[in-house]
Amino acid sequence: MRTYFFLLVLIFTFSLQGFAQDNLAAYKKAKTLIGYGNYADAMELMRPYMEQSKYGNLALYAQYHFGFAAFQNKQLELAKSVIEPLAVNKSWEKQYDARYLLALIYFGENKNLEALEEISLIKNPEIFALGERASLNQLKNSSVSFLIANLSKFQSNKGYLIALRNQLEKQSIMSTDEKAVLQQLSSLDKSINTPKSSTKNLQILDIAILLPFNYSGGTDVKTISQGNFILELYQGIDFGIKELISYGYKINVKTFDTQRDNSRLQKILLDDFLLKADVIIGPIYPEETEVVLQFSEKNNIPFINPLSNLDDRIQGYDFAYLFRPAISSLSNGLLTYLRNNVEGKRLALAYSSTSRDEQLANKLGEDSKSQGYPIVLKTLISPKNINQFFDSIQLGTDSLSKVDAVIILSDDPNIAQATFGFMESKNLKTPVIVMDSWLYFNFASYEMLENQNFVFLGNNSIDFNNPNLEVFRNGFNEEYGKYPSLNMHLGYELAYWIAETINPTDGFDFRTNLNKDGFNQGKITYGFDFRDSNNNRYVPVLRLYNGKLEVN
Image (tube, rainbow, N blue to C red):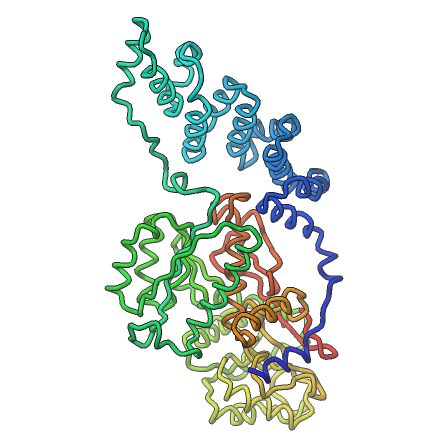
């Protein structure tokens, strides 16, 4: 772990300039401040993004967030002036959210009739249910005469009907008409039955974590070793969630050990918390994934596999996601790099026996052929035959080499060490493309090579130039007495990605928010792009320049 820290120090440079160039940084900060309740500062940061000629559709979201902050800050006239145009904008996907917010503003001004009329125009059942609840709360002290006079207009609003019945029941003397209305409402259920997503507390993010901590068949959490990669992932998630909570996020988490046992998993899915969860993290193994896929699809709850690149099992599911890039995204990212950075087209492809590497090798074989990149040699490798692979393509000398680029698909440190040793003994310019996991092997000092020709294929890569990384690493070290492993980094980033995608400010529609966000800078990674995708389509390809990792 100590050597890993030194590796980071060697390639760790801070680049605040890159963040200054992010013209959405203030927008994102404003949304965060709204989550903290700092509405006045959030409004000032959000104001510049409300210019539609400059920011297009984003300006509509900026206006909504600004209006929400103004409403919360008791600036009702200002909030109304911003939200009213959004409420009548039929082409905007959040029109009904705007109508609901406008109704709350009218209620705040004691303009009950206007508020009820706005609610009656809401066609989204989940948002309409929120309007019904707001109606019941606001009208509980309204006069019977007002409620009866407008009954014909708002008969579909159950909150209105319950408020009227409650007021009638308080009266000791009633007219004939009032008695008739009460009789009609006597069988009305006092509860407001709303869709699942509206019955939960919309100010709290509920996360269910289903991970096989005892993936080797154990049952005692106390026996889990520190080297357990699931435990490492969880520690990163847990650290991130605690940090988010300290910043003001309201997050509720419940964790389950599936023990890689399907019968146990089925019992876990009966827990009431699972049905109100906004998102499910894990499990990761195929047999468990299949069970949770069916559950998440049935109950419209997003399920996220935090580590896998294999999307073959989740194809066709609307609520299943990979946190990392799928095989197809990795292939696209690599071939894009080749087109833009490598003159020749001859490729050598070596891969390990893992499912990901085999599937990625096959996908690359198909995609490279269709794009005019012939594969001179494609072979399964191990630490024992890696040098034979190099000999087969005559990589020892650039002028004799049979290929223009070498691709090695493996996370095996033994394969990496043999490759690094070979390249260290040569003076080659032929690019060698490997997985970004090779950056974390403690035996390799890539910046010491005469030709820095290693290229790293991003797989939710850690951004060593990101100043947030040092904050996380030092904080984690203070908490646990050690610097975080790669899986801990991924868990930390996963927590932030979820909390910044679904929250009280942006709503809890995971799919809609991912499409709306487009590309997003990560907390400590290079970022995400889940637009119309169930996996991270952003695959940066990294190279070392003067000891600093940069995106090609």
